[in-house]
Image (cartoon, rainbow, N blue to C red):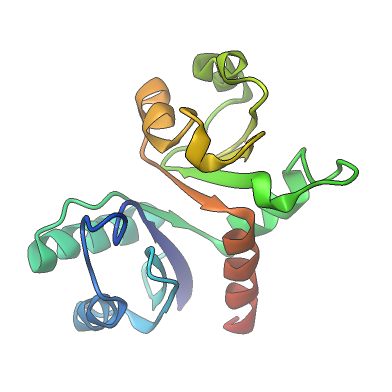
Length: 182
């Protein structure tokens, strides 16, 4: 059995793509996932399955959500290692007097190259900062996520990927949940 973490983008936000987590849990159990557990109402779902491929797991979840709920919901599946690498590779964690409330991680559907940072044209969003590491983009917002145009929609458009962003507190808690269950 492999544990996967599916990050669903854009559910239960501002009244759009409303989905109760217990209904999502039941739906996923009905298609064969085991030990399904959720974190928050914003679409963080752990599933156990014999399937090793993150892309296949993501596709199955996305397809079933559309079939059952009628919502077109992008899904990015990450591993425990992906979350551990957030702590190991974030360039911002080394900063003195860091306010982790300004840290976010954009998880993207494909591995990026470090030179893709040029495609993001992050300099036009100064003083916000970003750094690419595989399928993660580390973000430090100067003011806050709600006051920038450097968001998931912008990342998706510039890099032609599916992306979903989680704040540092959520990333920390998701890694703790992964560790509790493995």
